[in-house]
Length: 399
Image (cartoon, rainbow, N blue to C red; front, side):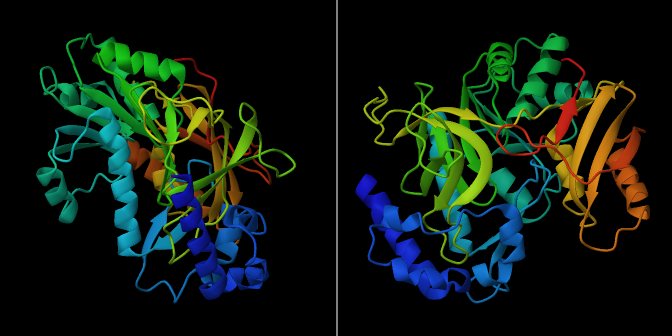
């Protein structure tokens, strides 16, 4: 596995310096081993990718697929890939889901952020026996209706960690203790221990967490032993300390990842903004999988906004709105009471018109289906969490 990863890394770096304008100046490092050669490449953040997008894509974007990050850090990123590269990412995701026992076509209740299931998406759902429910609209009535058919079904439950947790909270509150899932598969945000405990106890199941990013990288997934295995044929993972050097096993490091099969727009040394701890290489997992492990993934504490009517809004409720608002570069939601929220925002580089705030208010209330008081406050800076990522929701209301 290590040799395969090294070989793929070398091919990617060769391609980048030969065909991607942004990296062509790095061709002089060709005599080094791939892992050493990688260190000459700059660490890339979302802001830098956006600033150099045209020089990072091979042959233009017209025939490529755009993939946008969820914006859960408050800043949305965008990358481009070929159809084949997109399908590869889906295959890697499915591979990790199979560790939970899932097979394509197994009944699946899935929480997602694309509620329009017309056309191809609707056909895919029917063929794969997927019951797709919105992750950003969660209240007791919706949860009761969605879960009604899963009392004796041999089905799986998948979605954002905060969405699965919210379903478990509301199901417990309604006394729906007869819901069973074969396994719960989580992605998208941090699976906190109290999330896992609640999901597993309410739905009589086990949680299999996956770790990746919307830009087409599946980084790691949990096996039946509960360990996170790094998908080394697909990614090259670095955990860097504050000096930019590799953190030794057992110590915190900033997650920097390179996708090894992305040639249309190489994502080399992509800074995710998460912190993680690598497991010592001599610690082998009893599952027998030949992948190195992460001891712990430390993400952002993505909180949940609650309304007085009993609705729960996860982070992707807001990112689904702001991805279509280019006038706002970054935002944070602060909740101190059930009666409303404060919304801090940093204007984008385009000419900012205060009318955009009225548009945001209308979109929030239309998506929520009820009024919600929103007070806007323009700021020049939104502080980061210890991982380096902004916290998009800061709630002072307990669960």
